Amino acid sequence: MALTASPKNNQKTWIELSRKNLRHNLEVFRRLCGPATPIWTVKANAYGHDAVLIAKEIEKMYPPLGSARGSARAAKSKKYLGYWFGVDSIDEAVSLRREGIAAPIIVLGWVPYPRLKELVKFNLRLLVSSAQTVKQLSQLKNKNKIRVHIKIDTGTTRQGVLPEQALAMAHMLRAAGAVIEGAAMHFANIEDVDNPTYGDLQIERFTHTVSLLQASGFALPVVHAACSAAIMTRPETVLTAARIGIGLYGLNPSALVAARYKKQKRGAALKPVLAWRSRIALLKQIPPGTPVGYGLTEQTARRTMVAIVPVGYADGYDRSLSSRAYVLIRGKKCRVMGRVCMNMMIVDATPVADAAENDMVTLIGFDGKRQIAADDLAAAAGTINYEIVARLAEHIKRIVV
Ligand SMILES: *Cc1c(COP(=O)(O)O)cnc(C)c1O
Image (cartoon, rainbow, N blue to C red; front, top):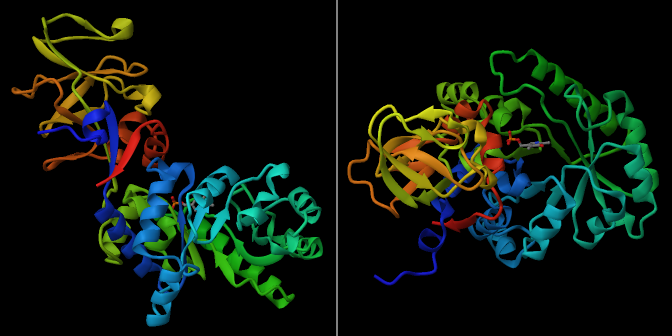
């Protein structure tokens, strides 16, 4: 068979994105959102999935309201609602616009002052926390076109103005000439479903502050607090919009959230969108007692068939996975041996009797019935699934399958 130019056969490592699973998760969250607007969070290159590919797939499935196809759908059905994209940086927002993404985009992170004018040029919304940023906005031409959301720090101690400063911030923004469209907060421990008290306090502070602003003449049509964990376990935190990241990619915000979500039967289980693959570059039999890899950190305990896999920490396979994680070859689990190198790792392929060079290796995802989940790598590396996928190197080719 002729080889095609697919990353599956012309790249040493590649990432497959399942369109079907993306659509599944999207529909799960659309249902959970009800009439609220989902803000699909595609920061960190869509949690390592590829922001442009993911946003384009979403726009193909659901043409955005501003577009001709979207307006036609909305005219046919009142149930056809819009959605936004949420990004961290101005660069991410600009790259989506340059690739033709038409849906509303909100920049959630900090924007360097000289770049603020791009909010106007590319029709972007901004989450604002700082008086300095407002001062900079006030000096822009066309600032009356900038739509802003006030971020309120209800106790996460990250972005945001303290609740008691929110009204002053709103007046400052109005004086600066910006359009105040919404308000937002972010939970500190909503993943910890057994300890709801702090989340209760945060949402209480937020709704109180929003009411105060509204009573003072700021309409705030778009208010958002919920992230994936909140929408999956605490529907009352979904206000007029919700920011959804990890769940869109089919990963659970935490094991506790997954268990609670399942128990409450609020929606279908999420399905992972991403699979990460490579191939066996080299196979060889090694006698017992042979050191494996840099630093001689382990030795073969028996006659061992080692497979060299051309992926390493520079590709996003964390070095802390050395001797701890597993990959799948021909549906069988094979352990990573010795230290993960920059662009290679060594795997014990002894369990695969018929292993051959060029065999597919699954680093994350299913191979047959077996799965290596991002959660498995996270547990082995002592981190969370978010970090495992967010650090997948951008140079790895992504394909939608
Ligand atoms: C990343 C992020 C989200 C999305 O959180 P998930 O847990 O991935 O759903 C929501 N809001 C803010 C402010 C974020 O930074």
